[in-house]
Picture (cartoon, rainbow, N blue to C red):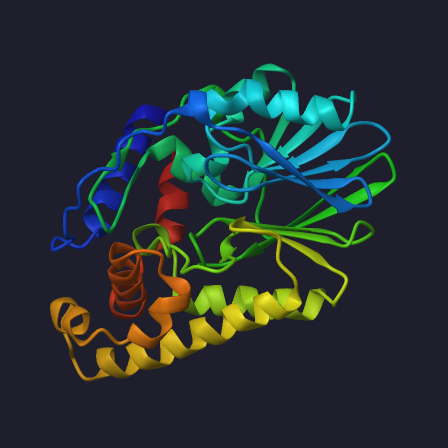
Length: 320
């Protein structure tokens, strides 16, 4: 019955994507052979690894290593080599901050090495069902069973290992409907996943539960957790501090307020795009014109579309 359930979920997800989603040309696949993994020390035996896809956080404990996000599958060996240069201890846990392939693509390879994959419940549902991109209409097929998280949680979880504690908490309906932030209090390191991108507009996966209101709620949580000494590992972009996070939140609030007014006025997506409501923000936050227009679109949809009902998805998944 599982196959039938996944088929039903996939159909439900596809139906939730707006019929007027504008098709964009697919980006060419990365040349993973040219990707280099750069290691940035964060202090307190914590590191950020940059490569292709989302940033990785690596925290070394006495008994092994906790990773947050694993980038794309073809980079597994390069990531392992970068980790080996930090410590000869094994990776014990890999936390997915959400389901996107640039963060969860390494799941299967790490799982085959005995690593426990941890994520919020909806990450497993999305990976098992396959997803559709609301902006492009591009479909991602279901992940292999071995790539699914083996340890999931609903709202809160902890990993205790080797004198370190990782607090995992869900932020509902922010970047996606299954976002996790990870707080390493003693290391003074916060890993945000896609709920925070440093120095550029974030993606808001509105077709899979994302919403700008949840993004702002995430930023509020992070501002309360952090102080001037905290090192913040964003989903994308350089290591950040609290000042950068505060500036990011201000941008999100500005975008939400402007777009909410246009939605209340009944503007269509094309009308909103023509108005360029974020033109003054683009210089700092949009590296390209496409990034600028995409941010307009995701904010518009996150405020104008009727959200799907994740409870229905869960009932279908669990029943089968």
